[in-house]
Length: 341
Image (tube, rainbow, N blue to C red; front, side):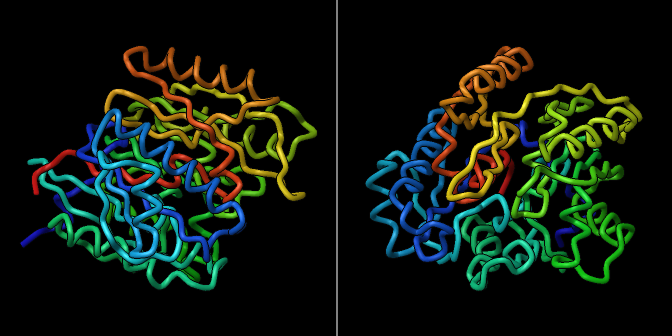
């Protein structure tokens, strides 16, 4: 009998068996006329990751051809029907026990608080993935997206109140209720609550755009130093929270700041540009960059990460094709850690 109490969520930088990515579905896109551009962006990320580890792209019957044409034959394809293409949020959260046995958490998914009408297939992706890979599945009643949490692998979880306490997810549950569920499901014992994510983030403030653990005791945060920018107050508040926080081991946090890129708009809406939406791979980091007037901050972000991870290869990928749809590299990926199954 598999007991959830034996399993914990590992840190993202622990070695991966593979990365999962869901292929775009034109009908569910915010801007369906950008389908080809979005697919090219997904393919760039998939091929960049494939240089470091296995990649499994989840496709529909009618998109398998597009995916294979753009990504090539070195990538594995798995047919599971889905509505949208954000594997971080509707895919499984993988867990490991002390013997490195794999399991997976199946959260409930409601399209970021019911923002999109069709998500029934997305809510079935996680158990289908776990069944395919013969990984035990734990079902949680909690509505939660993977992009809303980040862990250090040593008992500390980072999240935002804006998202996890939003009544469009788990109405009626208090912060205490949600903390208890997270501690029970992921084997964490300390939760650091930021208040808000980045301005305009339609996920209601996912932490993976705002801050993440870079190592045990280390948090990377994107900051804005312009008081006229709507991200100023929230990022400065998050910085203050982190400066006064301690992790599960009682450590004061080392904080690494990455300056935000210049504001950018698409079809009259400000885009949620974030370098924090990078993704750890085995021996590297896949970093979204934005070009144009962001070239200086693109380089600054890459330099900061390279200094923090001198043995890693930092691989920039074009982030604009993805962010127009509302997310970026971290949002479209889900890591499966190396383990026994």
